[in-house]
Image (cartoon, rainbow, N blue to C red; front, side, top):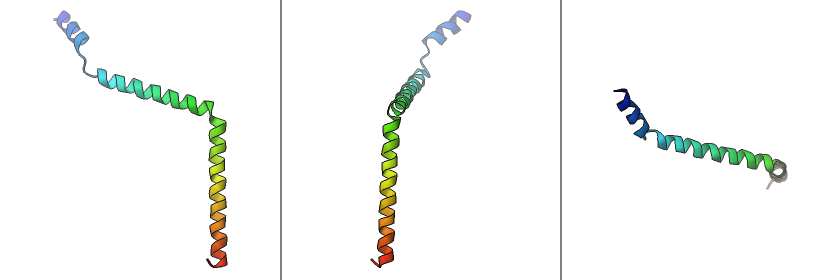
Amino acid sequence: MLLTTIKRFLTEEEGQGTTEYILIVALIAIALIGTFVAFRDKIFNFIKTLGGDVDSASSTSQSKKAEGF
């Protein structure tokens, strides 16, 4: 009985696919974190530039509204 249980445990593959997916997701997360850490200054400057572009576009549209366009 114990030997049968051990054999069944060793040959059972249910849940193996889920474990593989979890490992893949973990590796992708580690790669993304590494990329963000390596390029954090460039990413920060890019986001800062985008914010400046949004601010300037917003102020331009507000000045056009004030002029009556």
